[in-house]
Length: 135
Image 1 (tube, one colour):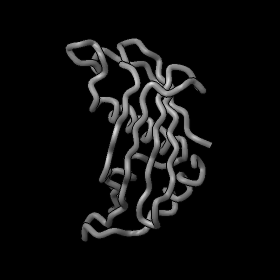
Image 2 (tube, helix red, strand yellow; image 1 turned 180 degrees about the vertical axis):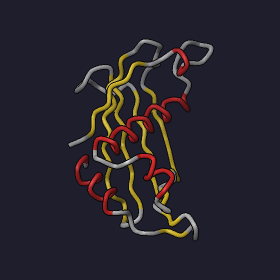
Image 3 (cartoon, one colour; image 1 turned 120 degrees about the horizontal axis):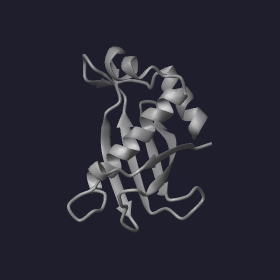
Image 4 (tube, helix red, strand yellow; image 1 turned 90 degrees about the horizontal axis):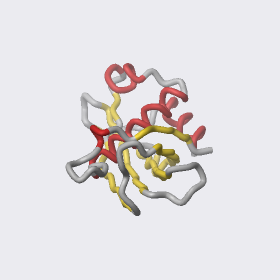
């Protein structure tokens, strides 16, 4: 079952035209990703700094179907899936209400690496469990 994260668009998310700046949509998606990791029981401090493993984003894209404005209440649906034993993708559907047609969609692809060697490695068990939980 996908992970659902709700968030209100803040003034800081918008540009001079009063709409959400495109790169900030990816920041909002990443916020949902981090929240899903916490809900799944991962310690973010250890995950992002202390494990010797990293999962950098190697590809990201966003499609907009209408502008997002300050004050909009967003429902972000996050659905991850494994692409290989060392890679996963996350699809994001951003709506104003759950079940409504998306106003924006995004995706990110992540590759798991061993930091010291900068080489690919299998996804850690806790990430595999996270994938299974929200796929």
